[in-house]
Length: 131
Image 1 (cartoon, one colour):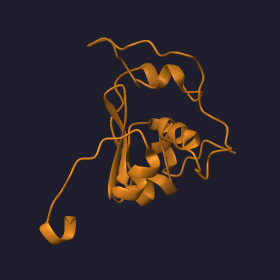
Image 2 (cartoon, helix red, strand yellow):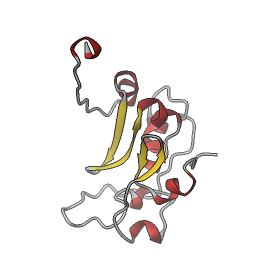
Image 3 (spheres, helix red, strand yellow):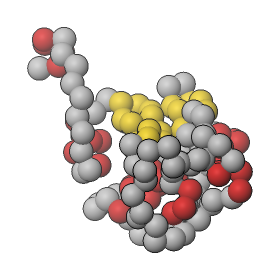
Image 4 (spheres, one colour):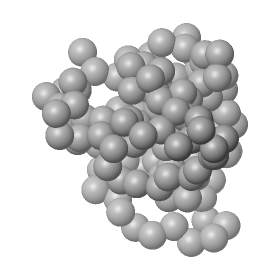
């Protein structure tokens, strides 16, 4: 239908299996912030943000299902407007460093159309968080 009618659609879901099947491009959000944006195939094959890795490791039948999760702390406290400084995922990320809390992270280009809001991923463009 998309090709026949020239349609675009916005699909919002927590089910990454469905997202991977239906979507051409994916934006991964955490607490209202886009953490990573890429073509679906690239995002699923080469995730860069720790939160994207966490989501993929939690998805049933994912290739990463047996990998070690990236959680550092149990911080599910709601974020209030104006409260966030630095990476909103930082309190839960085991890769969190002081630099992550210094200011709002900007998007870094790590592929042709792949952007990530994580300075560690942007260091070399191929960061892998699992052994």
